[in-house]
Length: 246
Image (cartoon, rainbow, N blue to C red; front, side, top):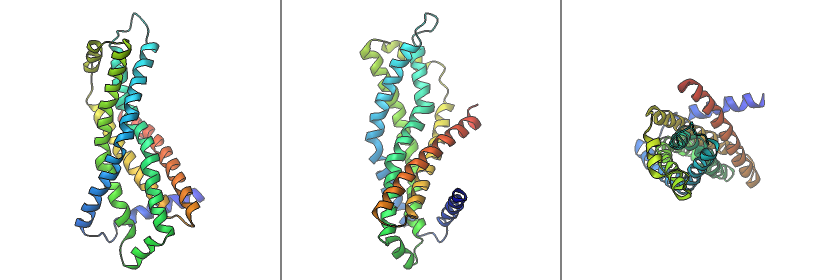
């Protein structure tokens, strides 16, 4: 029953985002600020993770595909497809669930316990729409571009690791990158990222918006936001893969 209560309240919360909207100019300004905060603010950690992720994938693939029947350029194919299909859209979004999700939940939770949200509602402002909707729209717009950058960086990290260690030369790596590339993989990854962005922002905002208590409860809301966002990302990853890729 407790889970059903939160599912119902989450649905009501999402419906309330679109009731009594503010001026478009207000949302436009907020969306730009949120895009900078969510996208540019997460660029560093995303790039760092992607570089090492691609490097590790290349090195592990070399050691796992040791066979005279397997051409060496297959290493680049494995790295490319793994980064594009799974590691960049899913693993990076799981990291962003911890960074962006906890930030949103703690921000809204602090506003709730300090009665700032109550003050907005007293002034007749749709607090959920004003505070949450720009975050959701901004994340859904900017995260696909961020993940696209991590794809290039991840593949570049694998290329660099293969060249430095001498496990696969640049010519063979380039050959593998161009071999049998399916552009639909990029489309599939972009669809996943948009869905994951919605999950991260909406679930985290819900947890923060309904925080009750004080500083301790704000921390608990941030923890729940990260946990539930991560669980739902993994669940939707399976669902989208089943629907769109198989």
